Amino acid sequence: MSGNSDKQWATLDKDLNRISQVEYGLTVVARPMVGLGVALAFIIIAGIAAAFIFGGQPGSAIIIAAAALGAYMAINIGANDVANNMGPAVGAKALTMGGAIVIAALCESAGALLAGGDVVSTISKGIIDPTAVSDTSIFVWAMMAALLSSALWVNLATWIGAPVSTTHSVVGGVMGAGIAAAGFSAVNWSSMSLIAASWVISPVLGGVVAAGFLAFIKAKIIYQEDKIAAARKWVPVLVGIMMGTFSTYLAVKGLKKIVDIDLLSAVMIGAAVGAVSYVGSAPLVRKQSEGLENRNKSLKVLFGLPLVISAALLSFAHGANDVANAVGPLAAIVHAQEFGGFAGKVSIPQWVMVIGAFGISFGLLLFGPKLIRMVGSQITKLNPMRAYCVALSAAITVIVASWLGLPVSSTHIAVGGVFGVGFFREWHHNRRARENSAKRTPEKRIAAEERRRRKLVRRSHFMTIVAAWVITVPAAAFLSAIVFYLLTHLFH
Image (tube, rainbow, N blue to C red; front, top):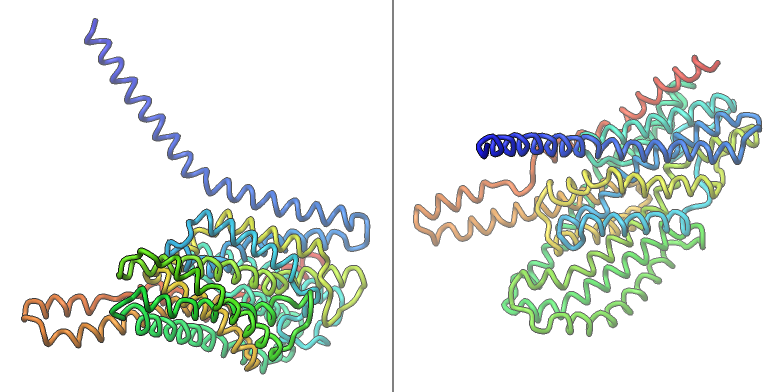
C-alpha cells in the first residue's frame, strides 16, 4: 500500500512539474502579447479621442485614421529612439531598467507637453516642393503614407535590434510620398544631400567628442597617483561643463514653445548655469569622496548622479524636440482637413501632442528594454565615466551642429558616442599592451598579444547599426511610395 502511495505521489509531482512548465511557457509567450495588446488599445483610444473631437465633421474618418497612425508612430519612437538616452546609464549600472524607464517616460512627456514646439514644418526639413503636393487630397494621402511608412520602418528596426533615427524615417517617408505623387523633380535634392551628409557627420562628431572626454578623464583622473584628489578637482569642472552644455542645449532645442532664444544668448545662459553648478558641486563632491579608496571603482560613485541627471535632461530635450517631428504629419493632416488646404507650417493641437507624449511613454515601457540593453551593454562595456562621456557628447554635438547649421540626428550622435568610447578603449588598450610587451617574458608576451587582439566593440552590432542607418531614408521612402500608391488607388 505504501509503495502505491509513493508511486502516486511521484506521478503527481511529475504532473505538477509539467503543469508548472506549461504555465511558465504560457507566461513567456503571453508577455509580448500583453505588450501588443496594450499598444493596440492605446492606438484605438487615440482614434476614439479623435472621433470625439471631430466626429460628424467632413473628413473626420481620415483624421481618426491619422490619429491612430500617429499613436502607432509615437509608440515606435518610445521603443527605439528613447533607448539612446537611457541605454548608457543602464549599461553603466547607474540606473536600473525600471528606474530608467520611469525617468525617461516622465522627462519625455514633460519635454513634449511643456516645451515641445507649437509649430512644425509640414514638409519635413523642406525636402519636397510645396507646389508639387498643393492639392489637398494628394497632400493628405502623402502625409498618411509618410506617417505609416516611417512607423513601419522604425518598428522593423526595433524588432531587429537597430537604433535608427525617427526623424530620418519621417524624412524618408515624406520624400517617398512626394516622389510617388509628383515625381523626382518634387524633391529638394540639396536638402537631401545635407541629410545624407548627417549620416556620417552625426556619429563621427559624437564619437570624437565622447572619445575626447574619455581621454581627458583617463589622463586627469584615472591614471593619477591620487585618484580621489584628482576627482575632487576635476569632477566639479565636468559637472559645470555638463550643466552649462545642457542648459545651452535646452535653450537652443527645447524651449521654443516658451521663448525664442538665439544661439549666442543660449551659450551665455549655459556659461552662467555652468559656473553656478561648478561652485555648488565642489563641496558636494568633496563630501561624497570622503572615505573612498584610491581605486577606479570609487570613481564610479562620483559619476553616478551626474550621469542620471544627464540622462534625464537628454530625455526632456528629446521629448521637446523630436516629438514634434514625429507628430508633424498628423498635425498637417488635421490642418488640411480642417482648413481645406496645404500650409508650409501648422500649429500642433494639444491633443496631438498628448498622443505623441503618451505614445512615447507606452512604447518605452512596453518595448524599450530591448534597445536600451543593445545601446547600453551589447555594443561595448560601459561604466559611469564612459556613459557620462556619451551623454555629454550628445549635448555638445547638437549645439555645435546647430551653430554650423547642420541637420543631425540625436540617435546617430548618441550611438556614435558609444562607438567612439568603445573604439577609443580598444585603441588605448592596444597601445598600452604594445608599450608593456617589451618588459614581459615570451610566454607573457604571447598571452598579452592574445589579449591585445580582443575586440572591445562588437563588430556584428556595429555593421548592423551602420547598415540600418544608411538604408533608413531610402527604405522609408520606398515603403511610403508603395503605401501612397495603395491609398490613392483604394480610396479614389
